Length: 146
Image (cartoon, rainbow, N blue to C red; front, side, top):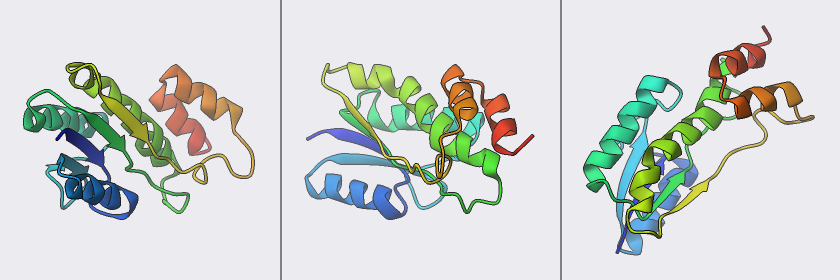
């Protein structure tokens, strides 16, 4: 069986994903704000680094897959945090874990995110551009209405 990292593993779709993988006989390294193998805040650069370091340590540096499921919806009081958690969190984590996914040549990744957080009713092209440019500071400022 394989080893998988699952973010958002303490609740919702992340918990369901982790449970299904475990039921199938896989090892799961859960990442969440609480009640997980790795406790980390993916909304911060330090939290992302900590999560990646711990996942690599616990997995022995080899992963068969990553399910980046952690995320928040539009009801979060800090609109800027949505960009950090829902976009920069999974992107940074997947970048950091990519070598572990490549080790056996068959690693897989899936990202589950909510479009309700930033794209309804219309797509904010400026925000999308800032996200794709990797400019977290400007993306957060724009999302906060600055």
